[in-house]
Image (cartoon, rainbow, N blue to C red; front, side, top):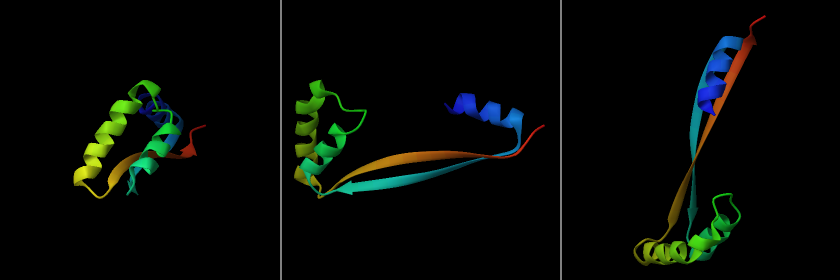
Length: 81
């Protein structure tokens, strides 16, 4: 989407800025990660067994699972006439 929106913004606005942030979400239980994944557009029922196996393996040596959600905002000001 950036490849479409950024050129359009540069043509139609005098000022375009890009801001990003990272939202780190931490879970301490396998069930909470599974529930989150199930509610996302990334969920694939055919991969559930393997994903759960990998999570169990992860939690065997780690106390939490961290998911990083990257967010980007394009701010456009001073529209061109």
